[in-house]
Amino acid sequence: MTWGTELWDQFENLDKHTQWGIDFLERYAKFVKERLEIEQTYAKQLRNLVKKYCPKRSKDDEPRFSSCMSFYSILNELNDYAGQREVVAEEMGHNVYGELMRYSQDLKSERKHHLQEGRKAQQYLDQCWKHMDNSKKKFERECKEAEKSQISYDRLDNDINATKSEVEKAKYQLYLRTHSADESKNEYAAQLQNFNGEQWKHFNVAIPQIFKNLQDMDERRTVKLGETYRSFAEVERRVVPIISKCLEGMVTAAKAVDQRKDSAIVVESFKSGFEPPGDFPFEDYSQNLSRTGSDNTISTPKNEGVVKPDPKHSISKVAKNKLWLFGKKPKSPLAPSLEDFSHLPPEQRRKRLQARIDELSKELQKEVDQRDALNKMKDVYEKNPQMGDPQSLQPKISETMCNMEKLRSEIHKNESWLSEVEGKVSTRGDRRPSADVNHHTPHGRESPEGSYTDDPSQEHRSPPHQPDPRQAHQPDPRQAHQPDEFDDEFDNDDPLPVLGHCKALYSFDGQNEGTLLMKEDDVLYIIEEDKGDGWTRARKQSGEEGYVPTSYVEIAMEKNSKGAVTYI
Image 1 (tube, one colour):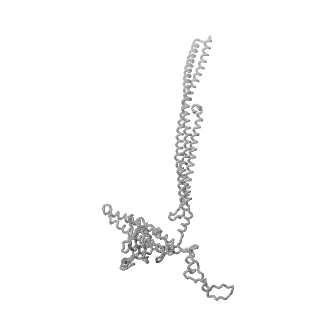
Image 2 (cartoon, rainbow, N blue to C red):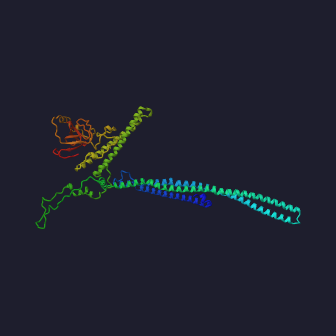
Image 3 (cartoon, one colour):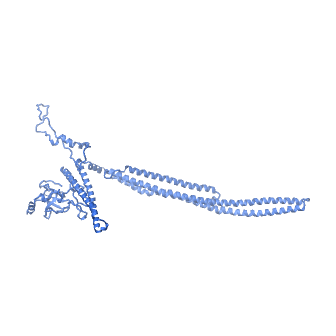
């Protein structure tokens, strides 16, 4: 069914219908606009919410509990979810709302053009009808005038009193009227034929074509609405997989919550390193009182059940040093924060010192990299003087070297304090292998002897706080043993008995006289214990003997040997 044939006479109604269609399209576009504004507002509020609850401090200062990390992961996933809502709003604005508004403008222009053509055709048909109607009225008027002339002529012709001239005049007048009526008739017939032809063209050609164009336009509008309905849903469907991943990430974060891990972090964060306080001794102040024999009196034997007060465990001292462990530690706001953290419990002090050593090592590595870069630049300037003066870099190189020495001194000082803390902790029977201490060397790699190198082939595992035979703070075997005695010991044909064995934790070059070269994971025999100078005498399986740094090895003494204790 076409509008041109079925609605040939409904031009005004089609005008109203097409206008309604465009208004409906713009109404739907307005709906899409309000929807995307809701999405934008929702996404903005979600991002503000995430920003509000995101940690304001650095990651190092944030709690490391799994519950906190999972919550931060959920915030990240929610932020990604907000981003997907923004994508929905953006695509709705571009693919739906923007397309609808552009199409609405095109429809308005096309509708205006078709309606103008229809009105022009109607105006032309009206003009043809007016010409035909005017010719018809003229023909009617001329016919009436001719009839009047005919009546006047007949009356004079029958009147015997009328003169001949009067009769001839009436006859001539009749002829003129009759001729004029014939011309009006012919003109009316021509105009009528022309109008009928134009009317046929109007209702069978022009109007059907115009109405067909309007029908095509309205159908395209309907199709466009269907496409935008689909696009409206597809925009949402395209982000569903990503939103599902965000929700899966939230579920994964929820599953990552580990109460045991969080409890272990609490222990690690607040562990003081102190031993729990022991039992208070009974202090009997009634020993000097005289007792009388009585059945109702319970006498305490003089030598049984009486514990003498131990000044080392006096109540005042215990209360002063240990009772605070069971309650809130008294704060001393006037106590300064000491450089060596000696005001902290042992375990916390060890962590703080280790963190400072790591930080200083990173700073030292930066200075080393800067020194190497300056030296390379200096070499380039020396080879190509036109690029710059090599001497201009010398002050900066000197300053860098000075900074390196200061940092090395600070590292050595903090390592000494750390060794002191670990020594105190080990006396409680809970000595830990030195390899368990997280001591990270800078990227430039620090050799066990304290020198820094950038050559990966010379890389060694850097032992924490190891002695260095070439540094003043480390005793040398040649100082611990006189040369004559040293030579006599090794010249003795009888080998010393094996006291235990050890495993090398780090490589040692053994360049000094009397020292023994060893590589990481080498197993050696202990033939002489450390006498307090930091060196242990060992023997390889090949029979070669020498001294190695005690802190470089993990020692296990035999049970039947002297000091049947296993230590590391």
